[in-house]
Image (cartoon, rainbow, N blue to C red; front, side, top):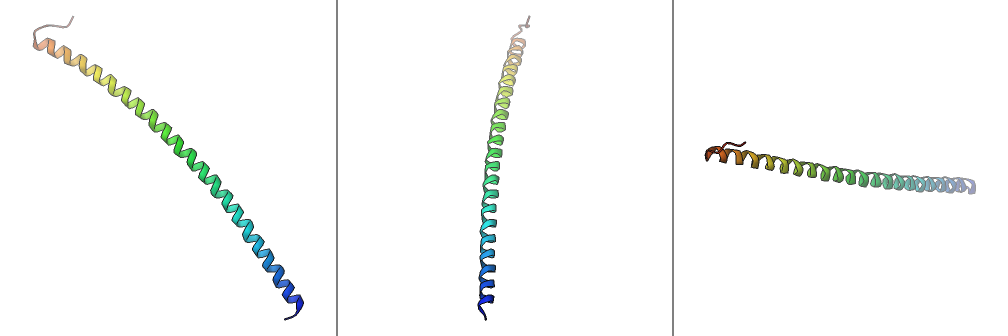
Length: 84
C-alpha cells in the first residue's frame, strides 16, 4: 500500500465525512421547519376548536331561551291563560 493510495483513501474518507455532516445539518433544518409547521397547525386547530366551542355554547344559550319561552307558553295553556 503506497502513500498515494493512502492519501486517496484519506481524501475519500474526508469527503464522505463532510457529506454526512452536510446531510445531517440539512436534516436538522428540515426537522426544525417541520416542527415549527406542526406547532402552527396545532395552534390553528386549537383556535378553531375554541371558536367552535363558543358557537356551540351560543347555540345552546339560544335553545335554552327558546325552550324557556315554550315552557312558559305551555304553563300558560295548562293554567288556562292564553298568551297574547
